[in-house]
Image (cartoon, rainbow, N blue to C red; front, side):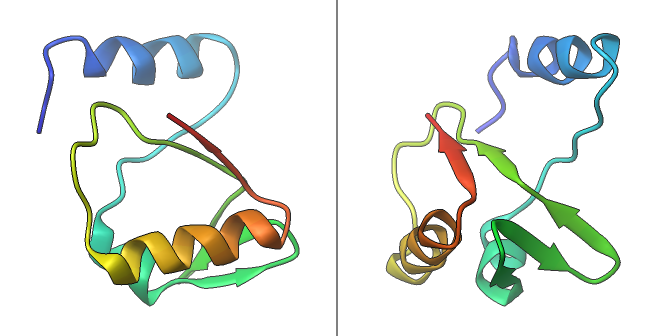
Length: 76
């Protein structure tokens, strides 16, 4: 889903001196979770915002659980 206000979140994060990316379930599922970070290729993330998520694959939920238990943050 792409709610009309989703770009405002991205813009607000960048205007406050941070960076962000949009990531897919496949990226989450293929990522490595370690020391509070989600690692995917050369990128790493410490916080994931789930905006207007209505459903997800069980494998994605398991990886997000791993992410949180290693110290990562998920906001919904």
